Image (tube, rainbow, N blue to C red; front, side, top):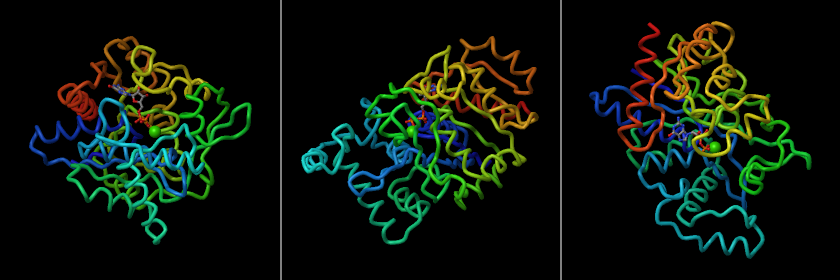
Length: 321
Ligand code: GDP
Ligand code: CA
């Protein structure tokens, strides 16, 4: 079975690690592909940074910093301190030295004419990831945020302002001219199952779906489309998705996020939706809107609990017939 996951960074990585574990435990015949958000990408000190891709890459390679939740394990920050002293990098955005190696390689390849998809393939070939990563698009579609002080890059809003500056709306630069990467298109056209990861619905999944043609590829797939809620009992498990949801007028709840994606029968994307046990009351109302929901434990704390979430997503898809 060809399983295609759409997602962002850390929440997506936790789910994909669980999926990889589940696939390995059940004979290893299924393949995993991830269509990765590129809206978080930006330029710093002349380098192209791709946070969501790198979170996935490092987590799947087992070289990520688990304590901190981002970047490489065993990092030093000597280069970043120098860049800040030179004034070429903002002092609120620190990059580790090993991580900078990735950004230098990526930028060198891009400057040499490689596409973002080529860069993903080269970076991914270093380790046995057990999953293939595709950028949502090869075009540059950095997310910007409209605040009372004007439009700023998503990273400035997220990291510098800790999402505390009121956000009016989110938009991706030149999104109208973007198109899905060949890898993303091919994966969606041939998927046996499509999963919306428990990623930030607004700034991780949103920019992927905003690429013209992407929603149609998901909606037009013969495969079931199921999603996993990143919201548990009215709160984000990690990160600041609540600030993003509030900005687009969506309540921070598992049910409201499912309604935001919408039922495929009603012009939306979802056939099925996994909510946490604590959100079981949303199962009935969602069913009446054409979304089959199951309530299961959604905390992904370790390989076992993450593999169980993946297994529950596959079971839900199977139950859709
Ligand atoms: P980011 O780009 O690194 O912020 O990562 P994502 O967008 O992929 O994921 C962020 C989302 O992951 C947040 O909305 C969290 O609520 C969600 N998340 C993180 N850990 C868990 C977990 O253990 N279970 C569930 N259900 N969601 C999680
Ligand atoms: Ca992200």
